[in-house]
Image (tube, rainbow, N blue to C red; front, side, top):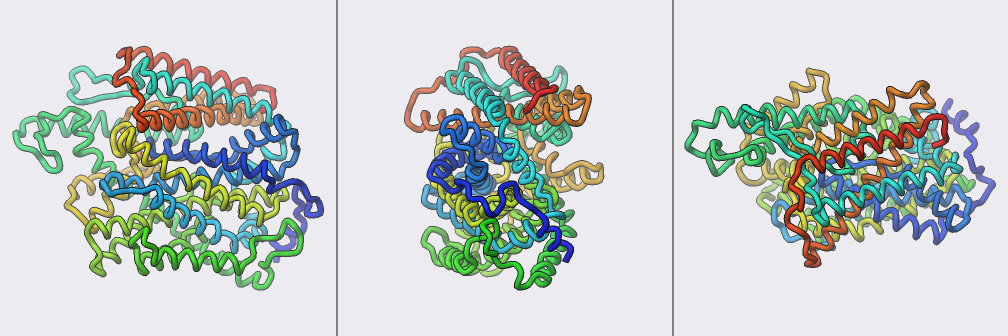
Length: 629
């Protein structure tokens, strides 16, 4: 009962007896706008590199700046509602782009209605399934589950006086990222890809996509993760591609899966025909390894949750205080039941009763354990990929055993995985948001309603964005690799569909296992193998900037100030480029003439511009010395 005593002594920033503006029309409108913006930005980023970034702190900062600076409103609870809705957009974007682009890769007719149905049902399940867990995980275990992103966001909200300066950093980064993207990929004043071969080293290539968003991502994830990703890229482009080129140079026959001899393939041709399958095997294995490594945590989380429910039986109901009121339980369980029934019998999908049951079982199982895991390690370290891969593999095997195969079976299995993936992403984010609300004194049911509004807002446009992106850039192309979704496609095909180059996939799996013995994060390195090295190189530049910023700080407090400033500016770079990328896609889809080639073919110009951008990120970060963020 020690947790109970700790809980009773906790006093939120806004006490339960106070009633501040919270779920207001202004907060809802602003939250919808930011949910759509950050949902679109994360969709673009996920399609580009298979990673997304947290939107809660940038959203909280922007919310404070607008509500205080424009509307002269000073309610921390309104700001909390806005960031809650924004993270819904981020989660919907992640759940969609990690799975649904596989439909485009299969050339399956995809409608906005289908995409909206999938992400809406997944998003609502993520919210509903987390509601019964709030009292146990957020309240009863407040002292033992820190929920790092949620706690950090609460601190930003509490120190709200810094909103103006911080919002300027995001705004400046957004403008710069957008302008660079527009000039490079819109007006084509210069090419955005730098590439060079290595003398006397056939088909060994190094390159760099001079994208502000990738620089920002590298800064946020830090030098270690960025370095492991670049290591994967170098392994593919400086080791595997030249090796395949060398050993296949004397062959006059095409070797499956390529349809031309290796001797006639350049580096990009070898990457497309062989490396992507090796990378897919490595990513799948890395995801499963991540899941296996967390099995003790998964089992421990499930056991702890069951014990917690039993120990607190009768005490987990919503209390009478404002800060204790969740959505009514009967509506939550009715909502879950209705969604599962709709999924089972809807004409939108063909998952059937088996698929609906799988969604209910895996959804609740993984949401329960994932909500506890993110409380310890944070949302960015949650094994969502591994749990989605496990769901897809199990469901495809069940479908195969019941005779549901071919393209229809693959699409149905992917749909199940997409709904579960979206539910996991939303549940992880709503867990962090409810932690923020618990600390600042928010009203739980209002946050839960706000999350659902954010889900609807983002789900309404995510299909439009995916269809536009495919039309403008083509899913699976070097411009838009959609790595996680391409992996889902390969796995479904491997179990239910066409023949695959299993030897290449097994080579990738063996590489991932070997990397684990080296003490590396196999999933991160595997993503680097799968993506062109041109993508991981600029991420490493961002990691370098973060490294030097941290090393130059004299105290822990100074280091935090600098990193926080850089993170906000980097978030702006990501959002600015991503949004202009969506705008360019809209223009292309509308038939607006976009130049085919860059007016300047120089490698030097984009590289210099990228270095200037990296220097600017370093300068902005170091302005944090002895100043408030």
